[in-house]
Length: 224
Image (cartoon, helix red, strand yellow):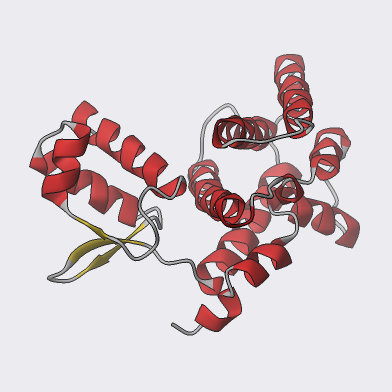
């Protein structure tokens, strides 16, 4: 991936997540290339790359549009993330090293403190989402990165978009992250899964999913 394409992709992804480009908006290559100071080809490639991650819907003869919020995408993303996380935790080939454990503890402690802020801004949420994703990826880290790790990272990015948009719509965010379940992941053993551990992973992947569904009326868009 060229540096120009990667830079354009990261900036556009950030702007989509932070609602600079709302769901359904057409992405005009010329305007975006000028905005991000890149060439037309890297910009076009960045839009196509984001379509594979679920942030952009590419329509034949029409170009790219910011993906709409749908119950299908949200529910499939949460269930897939839960399945992958469960598999990675239960089938680890090696135990976490002392260094990985220390890093995970540091991340979840920083995350806990960040959520205690009396007032959260988008900058705070950016940091929280970064800590959250780093924590889950650290818990599942292996000697070699697999396709499952890459897919989990992509899906966590999709769910992050829903949480940020929920904040922008409601000005509430803290209930989107269940910190107790994250400490549970850190301190638990997942060699043998059961309903209680499945529920823990479900809360860790997305707390209070019903609130997102309700705020965005996602059930109504399931069949669209």
